[in-house]
Image (cartoon, rainbow, N blue to C red; front, top):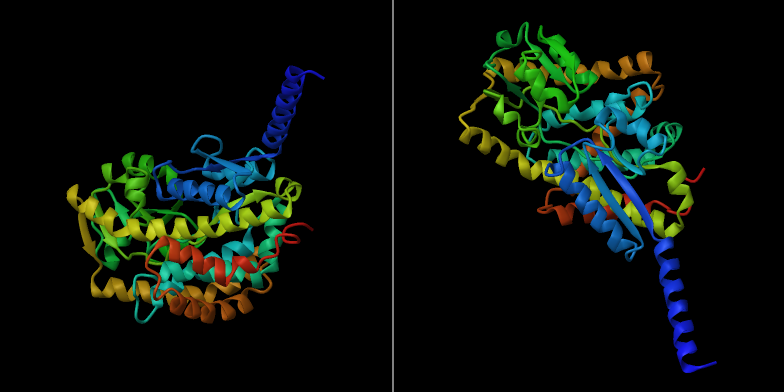
Length: 384
């Protein structure tokens, strides 16, 4: 064999090795129905970076913002393999995710915290993760039925009324209004105050307000900038209806793709799930005040409810939490609803203590990982 032939053979072997490595690399697409610059879009970037680092570059994740699948299309799209990973909102599919949705309905607990610190959404996110992974086999089974594996969540800040040409400061002001509602609990709120709850995806709130289909949208403040709602909103009532949106499965993985990966790959996606959960929740948390100040700078009128409205909102939260268990048991067949409600409140109290010293996205991610997701066995989870 000549020297030249040896070099050629060596080069061929190196090229084959590199090609084999490239072929072995996992490439996942991540569908999410939010703008790339939104809190969710930035969280997907964090997720992709975390998965790449944890997998030592063996898994590449590419995000597709508002293109591959819309929010209502995401769950069936992930189920059918149109996306490998998706930002799924269970409240859009109450029949398919009834127990997951019931956990979200516990969100009004954060409006009843006696000494709020502003970190209640961080605590609720942790409680949702812990209960879903460790105490809710029904939640995981619902994901399995949709050919998906749950790996992370997320929670918004308190919900406000984002209105066009309507100023709401009293109970009387709510009567007859059409309010965008993102879940059944918000519909119940509207009806309790003599308003009408209109089910619209957040991506349609701008058009709904602009065309007068709705008077107000019940949303957290960061959506003002995420969806440019500051262009059509004229008035904001803070902390009404209260509560938060916690019906989030922020990084659901197609089950077939999950099972085809090795243990290290699945472990990397679980690590990514902790990052997605923390980034989603923290980004919303940190964007909250900034969005309000941005709105104020745009000349939007920002008000608080009067004492009667504030008291009525808290009274609704208490009464709704008492009745929602029966509602979900009778309507959606959540047989364990009363037990879940009983267990969840003390779990939230625990997490309010755990997040007390959290001061960054990195600290929140590490907390979610250490307390919950690191204890999930990648070799068995989601494999049955």
